[in-house]
Length: 201
Image 1 (tube, one colour):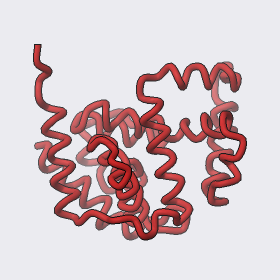
Image 2 (spheres, rainbow, N blue to C red):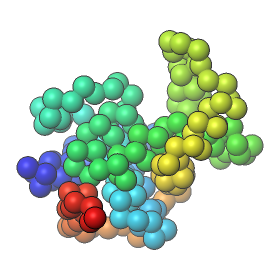
Image 3 (cartoon, rainbow, N blue to C red):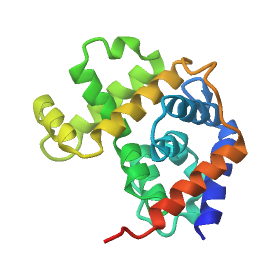
């Protein structure tokens, strides 16, 4: 069953993703370029897979029937993580889950971070932060948020993913060595097989 889901996920990104735009480029172009940046940085295969699939929830209308009855969160990064975790495990799902809030972390800890973003990315990030602060309950202060974020074991991976995401969104990934469809498929199947192997005692 996982093989079918992996093939469907890849089809969503590479084929259906051509029809959906995000920050001035197709989801397909953006995700492949983000994965290329991860690959060229010699990132773990799990993080390359996360880079390729991080925006799959933008295409979720195509996939709801195969989502396994999950109670999906409306935020695209959380929705994507919920879809990916049963197939690829936490090393893929958790950086994807956190890559949205990783932007807030970078904005709070790096003075020039926002200035380097593409305008549409910057606007989305500021809107996300405002929405989080206006949500139910008492919002975390900036200091509390940073402390909670860095305590998460997947924070560092999420920050790497966010940087590649931002760079691709700004067109900075052009010229990166891209992987073929068959190479991407092989990578995803390898990561999924590894996630399904029981840990040795």
